Image (cartoon, rainbow, N blue to C red):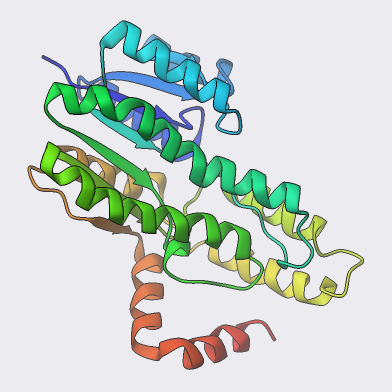
Length: 271
């Protein structure tokens, strides 16, 4: 019997590529995102399309309810939906900061809460949270995004311990820069939150740094899909999977350098 998977943020980028791969592998896949139109190609492959706005608790509840009524549970939940809010912490409006946390952190946690009882009743399952290397390594102008991912990392680690007795595994996927349109929104918010402020020059330098990181050094979405499939298929998945050369380099560099040297290294790139 095919396992049932829910992939959020399935309308584009990593989520779309992952949902497509899972469907090709024979999984029963619920594809959830705000744009139903963009997920039509997944419907033609057999995917079940659901509307999901991760900024709306009511939308999250409706998504979970539909799945529970139709399938009883999911075997695997992949919390992939998210975006990057950039700009100096001082400049980002609190409403925008809260929205970042709502989508990137509270939404995956709430969706997990809604689906866990049925998953536990079924005898096991897997929750795979798409985090980021930004959940382990900080960078300028990414304070709110880092905060959302650091929070997701921490709560997933706790969930891993809490859920182990129920044969439910909680796994983190930690991509570095990936060749998707994610960076377009991140760079747009950076300019919006920097232009005409005391951080304008800082914003321009951060924009250059972000553009470089999301350029030729970025990994293909397939690299992230490969890591997720390892977490899906492994009998005993690792707690976290780093994806891409940049993510590994960042984590290793931070570990070797320590905070002060790492700060200096990042600062030198901002000049």
